[in-house]
Length: 447
Image (tube, rainbow, N blue to C red; front, top):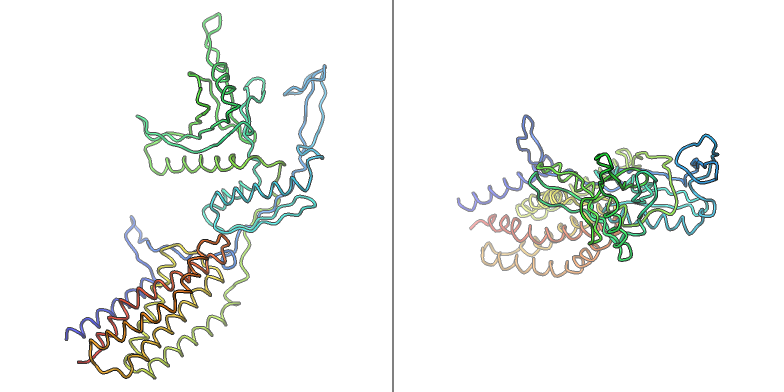
């Protein structure tokens, strides 16, 4: 009776795993029920992606001159003006196109974009980038066309005091204050620019005129002509680090948002400015060609093959074959849950890794069934035979496991996806069959 009860509990556990795998785990979230099991994450070959096309900008800017020929900020009554391209003709070279592509790749890698493809037309500099669609896609699209040049300017004269070439490193930081957590963008200047920053901090300060009015002499920190920060200095900066505040808050979500914004800007600046100005021509989502109509026949065919394989197990091995079938279904469900929990990216190569894992698990079950088929109904002998069969099969699977582990360190997503699926597939084969399948078989013995 105890053996039957254990058997029923194991089968109910497998049924529960199947329900979770296909449905999820729902908890109360306010007025609604929320599935805490993550959705499947698909690669571009299955889910489609964002296509961004950028060209070298043909925009022109107007330069104003005073009557003496000096460049000024605004149009002068007796002055002149001239329209000039923002990209000088001599800079439109293959070397600069390649440098732009290299910088964009570095930005996307540091942003940890899961999958992207980038193509460059070396004749005209056009860059086409395809990105996986996720919560970082909009940020990544800005990384593609933003020049990323930082300047520190005199607010009145527009004179550039320091720029990106003076920087050593940029990073986000935070600190606790009396009013909450403050987030900063730390601009660390190189050795040659420390004295210059010190001089600026002693020059751009608040003073008092003859009438006793406060006069501020400000600097402006700009990124691609957009103002990040405007300030005067109260203290001397002698450590070579200019801290730009990005907000102070006690709200965790606000703090994270400020920290993310500072981090993204740091990534943009650290890889250096693009040698050319680019503009986006297209930014669109492109659907995958893997529609339901295209995969309907392969899915049906695969389902029929699996069903026939399980029927063969039941016919050939009878009761043990039935329990092996139940175990097999449970293994697939556990594997699919692991794919969701560990946020594994599913590509066509990843699907092949899942199928190989399922086939390996089927072969293991057949090997165990063949070993136990003619065994006497003795629990100890069953245990010994089962353990030996498992050990033999696991040793055979070691090379495949090693291949999976190696591919987990490859940055090319198709290979990475295949490797992670193989690794987790074999790991779960071992864990699941040593525990669930083993208990299922041993408790099926009639004394």
